[in-house]
Image (tube, rainbow, N blue to C red):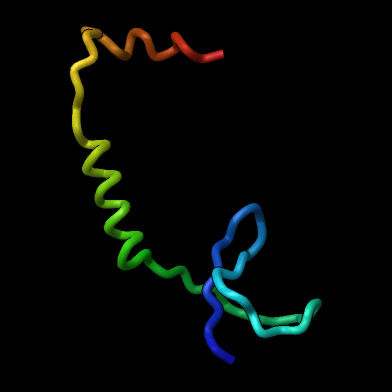
Length: 71
């Protein structure tokens, strides 16, 4: 059987592609965490690049307004 790639979310493993198993099949596996590759890595780099930038806000002390929009 081929390797099944899945994401763990909300307490369950969700396959990332169709799985060739009968419904209710019992399986045994040892999870192996894989590092993101390719497009996912490039997307993370872009997100971190954007987050590392600073922008003029006109507010001299943004920390003082931290709770301003909290319920």
